[in-house]
Length: 197
Image 1: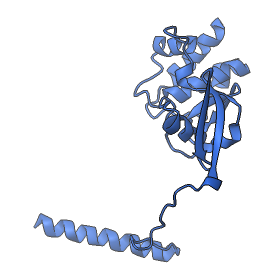
Image 2: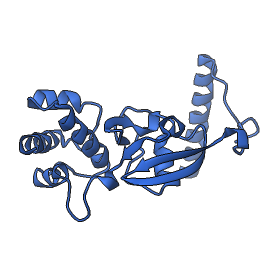
Image 3: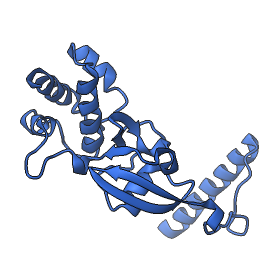
Image 4: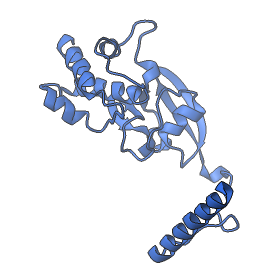
């Protein structure tokens, strides 16, 4: 009986989705109509040279490769997180020539010769960056997924001088989302680090 119910429910869901798509004028892609991916041809490849965390790095990538994918997939730096992949969450924030950038929204080829700092390059050996230590002191992380982007954005926020008040810190950190809701602690960590700088 549950098998029949599941089949009926699935059929209803499929019918609903198909009817909704048809009403909205959205063509449905079936497996025989799905676009096939084409391999990158030589005219779509570029050699990108960057200084990443103080080290010269070179990679040959498709021209459409984001800076985020270059870092994670080609340079083996997985600390920068892929969150929404649309520039809305800030999990992929890195510093490019000391300016914060959403790495998912920018192409790697646009940063030829740039200096990129990722979360892996924030500490100096075993010595944590002061903001990393402040995150620990103020419990500014819970699940930790957003933490790399929060830290990179926080470092830039301090360097930019946007730490005059808790409200100002919140405003300038608003591009970084924390699903766990550790915002108060993150602001406290940035505030402490800014005062000690």
